[in-house]
Image (tube, rainbow, N blue to C red; front, side, top):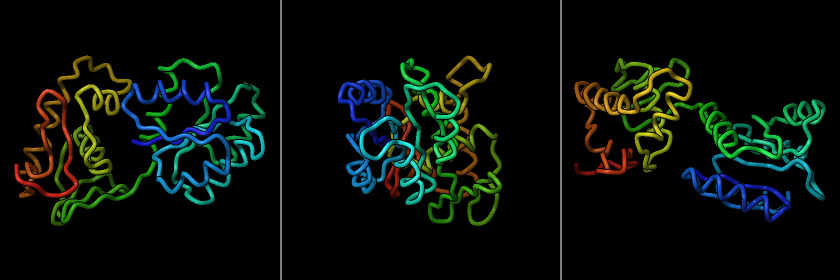
Length: 225
């Protein structure tokens, strides 16, 4: 996933990049609003936006970004913890905010939460479809019934084709606050996805790939197993 970092301070951009790239994200950087608007053409998955910038401030820029793409998630960074600033930012369309100084783990958890809530759209692969409104998986217009967790994993694959997820990636995204303590439960749900779609007639092995020793990946184009 690609994250656009917008901050006029070089040191802060480097710190954010360090945290984000360490968690598997790719990053692009902008030092001001003009540069940020130009980089939207790179179609980032999320924007990290500092409120206090010279020229166009972060709240104004947030409004401009949301006017262009209302579904693009924006997380505001602020050195001010007063409620007025927070309210102004959220009213401008921000999906969340983080107060500086911040802990890296908290920042990453907030980003994951925002990304889980964002871009809720139907996804189609030929006759395989995830239907957002109902939360159902359909193949040839017939529902493929799975557990909610297996459905959530498949939804991630369909929304982010070609991205490699290791077991802990999927566990953290789908079981973020669960009492379930064994990440190996991911493997059982992957088997369910394979079994259920295979039984329905979908060529699952042509799309859902196991990268041995690294994790799982959904191939955007059908390929030989």
